[in-house]
Picture (cartoon, rainbow, N blue to C red):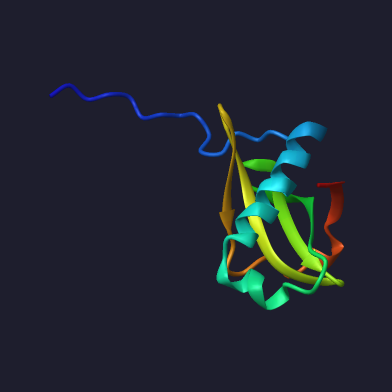
Length: 110
């Protein structure tokens, strides 16, 4: 079997979402949270979602991470990492979100 050259493309393409994509990420994060059993415990609280970005520096360079944040009355309820794909953005819920989440700059509200 012939050997193929290793793929040298970055695992996560560094791409910052535009305003429409930020709105879509926030909307999808809220929809994903509402499908969880946790959402019923906060049924009386007004839920909101927004996007947040964080810059990460490493030996490979600087990358921007994008998150969908679901919150209610000042408390963060869930955080979803948004990963860029060629056909859109994939969301994955984080079990441990960044400790400095309160200092993340807000994106657009969704």
